[in-house]
Length: 294
Length: 294
Image (cartoon, rainbow over all chains, first blue to last red; front, side, top):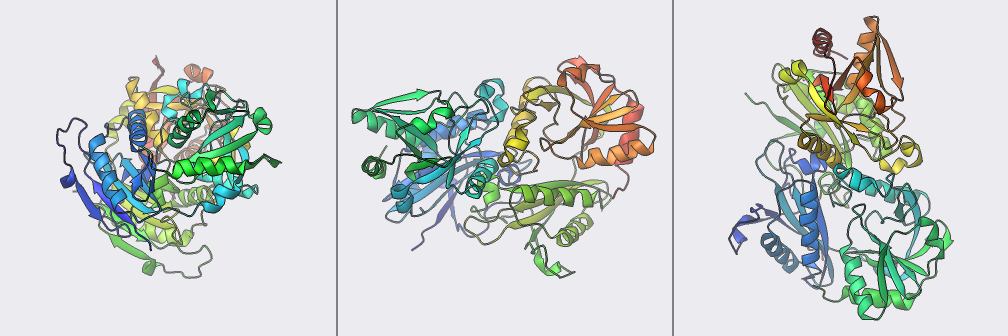
């Protein structure tokens, strides 16, 4: 059964004192036209978004996603989202989901061209079945992201730490990976450091330490990566944010791409060189990530 | 009077033998919902576009714009656009324009998520009034584009030569320019070469030679720049495509940002240093650009 849901939102100002935003929501048919051709999201990818995993109608890590939405909006000079309003919209979307895994997506667009205000909406839909990829993993290739690590500080207009709707490059990188016989990609800075995957964070294991690239504005702060790091620490592991030379990838003990929907996908090969895959650990990671998290 | 127009297009396969595509067009109200929330243009800026100037219902340089649309589609692994179909859609849109200057916009989106085919549409609307900016010019700041000149050849997945809908960075650069007290920006490569403006090409004058950055995949091929170069050559000037160090900008005799709608906007200052502005030449350039061109 396919349950799809869409809710248009009239964005409230961030200091709106209301506590109930029901009147700002309009449910629409997700397969019917809802947006005009003047939408700047569609004309220029001009807006920000979040994808939230939902397990049995429980939206995961809502606070972390809303934090990041607000951060992305700030980087893009969009009005600050009213977090209570978004929380209520997410609750409506999560309640509309079926059992099992679903996806709730938040979109905050700059609005209609020459229009007065941002437009916003939330959608819900069943998630794809990621059982196989969580068990069997992904082969990745490294792809040059074009920037060096110092770029974000030098050029904030490149919006490198924002989750904008301008995702054409991310999608092109996934196609490039598949053309090279891989399933996914790890972006590397032009000066040779590990960044992130087109739609996931990268976590590497060295002994009992789990490391992920230090964000430094060059990559998105991963909500799932952060949640998993907390869990790993509670299990007695060490976690660290580091500047990681891509040349060290072949020497890691294991690697994962982690994201809100697919969760932890073990990396079984990098640029054709096999990586060890600790199935028991991956299974435990995904059991944690599939449990209700806030 | 505001005349706005929108036409949804069922994209034909590039080898479709029909000569009349009227049945593939559906006129829609440009201010009414026409796109679903599942549109990948809106979710991921995943598609390509063109903006065509229209003068008294004559669409300018249609062939050059369609060439570039096809080039962008190829870089993005989108199905090749059927050029005769697009030409008919443009003709419909241009005919719907009022007198004076208008804009016709073409959008080819990857389609609806999990959907079978691209979606496409054409819009028409009155152009903004660019009289003042053509006469008085723009002050620009140089902004680092983050890439070096060799990047496009090394990393085609960055789609640097494609006019994609993922324009959030272009819009952020314009905001950054205004925050710095300027009107517009010139992007410079991280290794210090002139590239393009966020929504325009750059033309520089040195004596009787007009130069523009060699594209090399790093920038868009400018339809208006190409048209203006043909005209300048017919007037006895020399034109050239060069690799231009940004450090030479203060020494040029004049500079313009040229684009399909605003046409030739003289650059009156770069990073706060004044540039000479040859008003008569700019007026002649815009007189040519406002004449019917094919």
